[in-house]
Image (cartoon, rainbow, N blue to C red; front, side):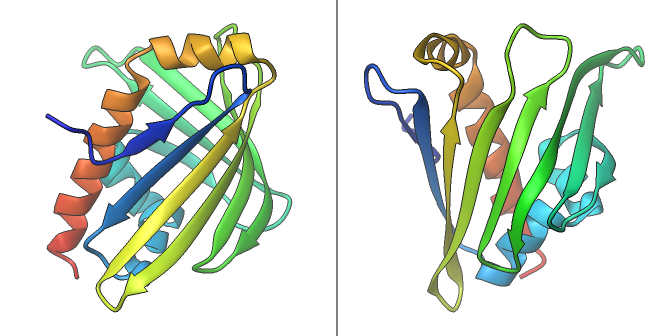
Length: 155
Protein backbone atom coordinates (compact mmCIF):
# COMPACT_ATOMS: atom_id res chain seq x y z
CA UNK A 1 0.00 0.00 0.00
CA UNK A 2 1.35 3.39 -1.00
CA UNK A 3 1.98 5.86 1.82
CA UNK A 4 0.10 9.15 1.52
CA UNK A 5 2.84 11.00 3.38
CA UNK A 6 5.71 11.24 0.89
CA UNK A 7 9.34 11.33 2.01
CA UNK A 8 12.04 12.32 -0.45
CA UNK A 9 15.68 11.78 0.44
CA UNK A 10 18.30 12.43 -2.21
CA UNK A 11 21.58 10.52 -1.97
CA UNK A 12 24.44 12.32 -0.23
CA UNK A 13 22.28 15.14 1.16
CA UNK A 14 21.66 16.03 4.79
CA UNK A 15 17.95 16.67 4.32
CA UNK A 16 14.60 15.07 3.71
CA UNK A 17 11.45 16.55 2.28
CA UNK A 18 8.09 15.40 3.66
CA UNK A 19 4.84 16.28 1.89
CA UNK A 20 1.24 15.39 2.63
CA UNK A 21 -2.05 16.67 1.26
CA UNK A 22 -5.11 16.64 3.52
CA UNK A 23 -8.82 16.90 2.90
CA UNK A 24 -8.93 19.62 5.55
CA UNK A 25 -9.09 23.42 5.44
CA UNK A 26 -5.72 25.10 5.98
CA UNK A 27 -6.80 26.62 9.31
CA UNK A 28 -7.71 23.19 10.73
CA UNK A 29 -4.43 21.60 9.57
CA UNK A 30 -2.45 24.42 11.18
CA UNK A 31 -4.40 24.07 14.45
CA UNK A 32 -3.67 20.32 14.45
CA UNK A 33 0.04 21.19 14.64
CA UNK A 34 -0.21 24.10 17.07
CA UNK A 35 -2.86 23.38 19.73
CA UNK A 36 -1.62 21.03 22.45
CA UNK A 37 -4.83 19.06 22.94
CA UNK A 38 -5.10 18.49 19.18
CA UNK A 39 -1.44 17.48 18.82
CA UNK A 40 -1.96 14.88 21.56
CA UNK A 41 -4.94 13.38 19.73
CA UNK A 42 -3.24 12.61 16.44
CA UNK A 43 0.36 12.14 17.57
CA UNK A 44 -0.55 9.86 20.46
CA UNK A 45 1.90 11.68 22.73
CA UNK A 46 1.64 13.96 25.75
CA UNK A 47 2.42 17.63 25.18
CA UNK A 48 4.39 18.92 28.18
CA UNK A 49 5.01 22.34 26.63
CA UNK A 50 3.88 24.11 23.47
CA UNK A 51 4.68 27.82 23.28
CA UNK A 52 4.01 28.82 19.66
CA UNK A 53 5.91 32.05 19.19
CA UNK A 54 9.37 33.20 18.18
CA UNK A 55 11.78 32.04 20.93
CA UNK A 56 9.06 29.70 22.22
CA UNK A 57 9.49 25.99 22.55
CA UNK A 58 7.88 22.62 22.96
CA UNK A 59 8.34 19.26 24.64
CA UNK A 60 6.53 15.99 23.83
CA UNK A 61 6.63 12.73 25.77
CA UNK A 62 5.32 9.24 25.04
CA UNK A 63 4.93 6.51 27.67
CA UNK A 64 4.28 2.80 27.37
CA UNK A 65 1.26 1.14 29.08
CA UNK A 66 3.39 0.62 32.20
CA UNK A 67 3.99 4.38 32.46
CA UNK A 68 7.65 4.28 31.44
CA UNK A 69 8.75 7.16 29.21
CA UNK A 70 9.83 5.66 25.87
CA UNK A 71 10.21 8.85 23.83
CA UNK A 72 10.79 12.50 24.61
CA UNK A 73 11.50 15.29 22.16
CA UNK A 74 11.91 19.02 22.50
CA UNK A 75 12.85 22.06 20.52
CA UNK A 76 12.88 25.81 20.13
CA UNK A 77 10.57 27.68 17.80
CA UNK A 78 12.50 30.21 15.72
CA UNK A 79 9.75 31.46 13.43
CA UNK A 80 5.97 31.23 13.75
CA UNK A 81 3.66 32.69 11.11
CA UNK A 82 -0.02 31.82 11.69
CA UNK A 83 -1.44 29.45 9.02
CA UNK A 84 1.81 29.67 7.02
CA UNK A 85 4.99 28.36 8.60
CA UNK A 86 6.89 27.19 11.64
CA UNK A 87 10.67 26.96 11.83
CA UNK A 88 11.93 24.94 14.77
CA UNK A 89 14.62 22.69 16.10
CA UNK A 90 13.80 19.08 16.99
CA UNK A 91 15.81 16.93 19.36
CA UNK A 92 15.06 13.41 20.51
CA UNK A 93 16.24 13.09 24.09
CA UNK A 94 18.31 10.11 25.26
CA UNK A 95 19.32 9.13 21.72
CA UNK A 96 22.60 9.51 19.84
CA UNK A 97 20.93 11.82 17.31
CA UNK A 98 21.87 15.49 17.40
CA UNK A 99 19.37 18.30 17.04
CA UNK A 100 17.84 18.82 13.60
CA UNK A 101 16.26 21.86 11.95
CA UNK A 102 12.69 21.71 10.62
CA UNK A 103 10.90 24.05 8.25
CA UNK A 104 7.13 23.41 8.25
CA UNK A 105 5.14 25.17 5.55
CA UNK A 106 1.35 25.05 5.32
CA UNK A 107 -0.39 25.66 2.01
CA UNK A 108 -4.04 26.17 1.12
CA UNK A 109 -4.97 24.15 -1.97
CA UNK A 110 -8.74 24.79 -2.03
CA UNK A 111 -11.30 25.87 0.58
CA UNK A 112 -11.35 22.30 1.94
CA UNK A 113 -7.90 20.93 1.13
CA UNK A 114 -4.42 21.81 2.30
CA UNK A 115 -0.85 20.59 2.26
CA UNK A 116 2.10 20.49 4.61
CA UNK A 117 5.70 20.49 3.41
CA UNK A 118 8.38 19.75 5.99
CA UNK A 119 12.05 20.17 5.15
CA UNK A 120 14.30 18.64 7.78
CA UNK A 121 18.05 19.22 7.84
CA UNK A 122 20.32 16.85 9.77
CA UNK A 123 23.85 17.42 11.08
CA UNK A 124 25.22 14.88 8.60
CA UNK A 125 24.20 12.56 5.80
CA UNK A 126 25.00 9.64 8.09
CA UNK A 127 22.55 10.81 10.79
CA UNK A 128 19.87 11.35 8.16
CA UNK A 129 20.43 7.88 6.77
CA UNK A 130 20.24 6.35 10.27
CA UNK A 131 16.88 8.07 10.87
CA UNK A 132 15.57 6.75 7.55
CA UNK A 133 16.40 3.17 8.65
CA UNK A 134 13.98 3.55 11.57
CA UNK A 135 10.23 2.97 10.98
CA UNK A 136 10.05 6.74 10.58
CA UNK A 137 8.06 6.91 7.32
CA UNK A 138 5.45 4.38 8.44
CA UNK A 139 5.03 6.06 11.82
CA UNK A 140 4.62 9.52 10.34
CA UNK A 141 2.17 8.21 7.74
CA UNK A 142 0.10 6.51 10.48
CA UNK A 143 0.06 9.72 12.53
CA UNK A 144 -0.97 11.78 9.50
CA UNK A 145 -3.71 9.23 8.72
CA UNK A 146 -5.02 9.68 12.29
CA UNK A 147 -4.88 13.46 11.84
CA UNK A 148 -6.99 13.19 8.67
CA UNK A 149 -9.58 10.90 10.32
CA UNK A 150 -9.89 12.86 13.58
CA UNK A 151 -10.11 16.28 11.98
CA UNK A 152 -12.40 15.27 9.12
CA UNK A 153 -15.03 14.88 11.84
CA UNK A 154 -14.34 18.45 13.03
CA UNK A 155 -14.33 20.09 9.59
